[in-house]
Length: 214
Image (cartoon, rainbow, N blue to C red; front, side, top):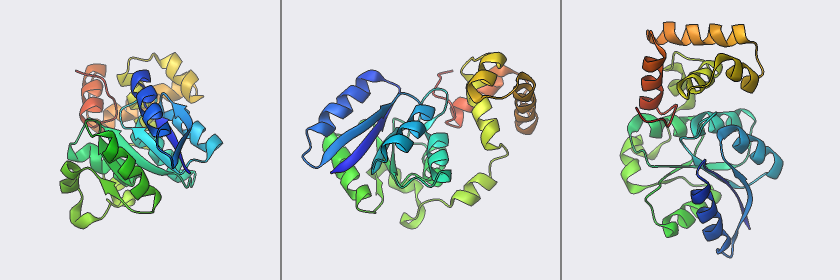
């Protein structure tokens, strides 16, 4: 059986995917998650073969969650699932460690095929995504991160600020001090040359860090 974790912040989508997956004779759902942090914890607790990872989730997005799984040396194979097909987002999560990318308007038959292909050790990309991958090779993780001016913690703070969380709440969620959050936010603004929370939010949305609409 292919053990699967479904991570998506929309309950209706999660329920629908889980029901369809359970109808497949060679697949089972071993866990669900509503945000990136929960996804990382669920994978650690259930040891799935495949994770269906929504790219845009609150608190911790799918890119950062995938990156954390890679750092934890998780053997789970991540398939990114998203409505977005722009180059920056696609290459970002593939560089983070995903081995598949599926658009949310795909039929379930394609998703099931993608799960089997990825579980077999191969790469699966929706046809319209393939143009973002040069010569069929996944983006180099180190080169992709070298191109980002922000650290992992700074990207987390950026997302939480963009989603409207207070400094105190961010400190609580990340288990760090309030002054540390303020320092990270200041560094983010300086590095990106942005001067307001509104500008930070727009940057977060455009870069795929946050799913908020502006």
